[in-house]
Length: 283
Length: 351
Image 1 (cartoon, each protein chain N blue to C red):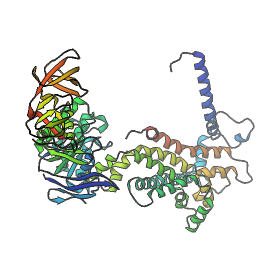
Image 2 (cartoon, chains in turn brown, purple):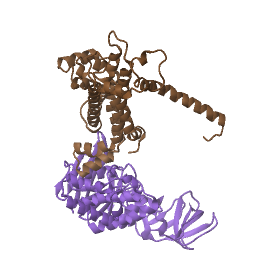
Image 3 (cartoon, each protein chain N blue to C red):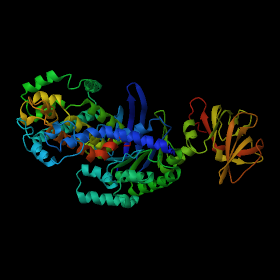
């Protein structure tokens, strides 16, 4: 639609700018808060312009033990924990879903559709619903306070299995037949044809699942008691509730800022593939 | 190189039998075309030979090996699919080399074969492109290249030209034929296009509803079609058919016209006359009320009805002809050019 209405132009821009401001303001405040002294953040008019303590706060947060007077791990350790967990969840989910979708689409076995629907039904059961029995199992396996305990209960994904099933269904049968005539064994077909063809979908899913893993809050909170195993998202909340202290906003906000960076980095790095994976239908 | 023998081949899906006791022997180096309307089972037959469909009954031999239970890869065949089925994420070179790589051929050998095939097919310039960067005709060549590099005993083609435009189809048709002559590989080609079938095949197998109607050279099929179905399927424009009675060799058409035949039969028949076999003749017995002309340049198709009846009739005449619609034109026809089929069974009646 090409229209030439100056007033409309101004109005649309105003609306858009307002929208951006609403989204960006909290992030700006976070940034500003991370650049001031602890005491400044407790005084009445909150600063709206950055102060001069960015690097000081950064070193204190990143390498120091975070909040003064607390026993928590340094933020680099939390970042590392979160990173491990998110990566294990994202990669594990993708690997398992790819294999199960491959089995469901390309192999004939008894109760094939039964299995598919069983997987599908678990879509309706998020972690929160099954959290007690899952905790019980993980505790019995002795996986509390470990990366395995953090990631394995979250690693099966009905959504991803379902999505890869749909992707595989769009690949023409001739591709399989052609590969069979070429002499490809099932796993060679899987590696050489299916995986490269679902590359963009894998990337898109990786972005979504990485953020899903990174943002896990309830589960890590339950199973990690050791400060060395805390993840960054849950620790922000814990920092706020540190007993008998006024919150140290500069440190907390710096931590929040650092917690935002990896997901942003993943999205930016994979943006092109991500968009392709969500929109591309041509095989 | 190998001959192929089909023995009493049956395919059924549960209770529905789609191929009924197909038999045939394809000689070494022959170009066989399996032709028929859609749904006649021709692709199923090809896929059974390829090993992509299981065999419900009967036996398939490639060379002297019974291949019923062999995996497609172990049958020493190569197949060209209708939609080419190129791997979209691999370059042309990788597409052609993939099968060889899986067979663990040494790298130099693979390279040599790919280069040779690319040379033959004139696709050397595209070796490093992806399939989506190629036109339909080029993809077609790559698909054939993928078949050639494998140096198989048998080529299988599943309607490989139906996705191309008309002009390219004619050109590729010739190239496939030349290539097959040059390589001398036994080939089976499935198509629903009778012109393609006639021009390509050493021998044609006409399938209809899962039955083999006739199996022979294109000329045999044209000159002596075994049934009304084959007669109507082979040849363009299609043969004219009409119900008629024959009495001691005299054929009486629905409108009362009497034609002479070279037989002494007496029966109810379906009479077949090819449009190109009638000759304009002022003394001819066949009278046609003209309705329309189709000018094709080299020849003219005359559409009309037999005089005093509703029987449609098409005649093909050389050169340019033009008359007013409604004119009466007379034609004669040689007795040898009449095809007679049993009115009930549709089978050919021999003089």
